[in-house]
Image (tube, rainbow, N blue to C red; front, side, top):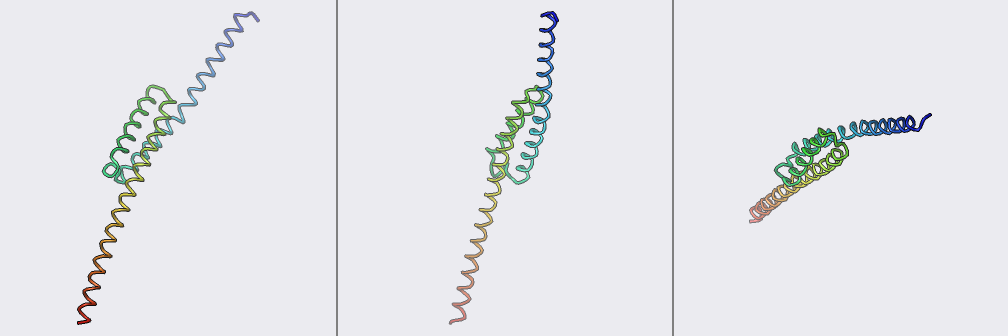
Length: 128
């Protein structure tokens, strides 16, 4: 086989491997973007936009950039940004859940205090 033909075959094979690598990166990146979209939606429904606005804004920004990277066929960047967006959304959701739990605990403590006061008044009235 002449040297030129061997060179062309090697270049062709390298091109095929490169194209195959790009195609194989698209599917995980697309899946990661979809997962991060769901994470942002879940955090939003948990009230994170009000209770953890900075984290939600970060998650939304990264998700938007991941979508842009996906459209530009920059699959590695899309995947990285999608992973970061998911983490930010999960943090926002956790903060929202924690804030809700703290509020519920505070309300419960307030109700317990009021019940104790009423019980103390009732006991004072019956002892007189």
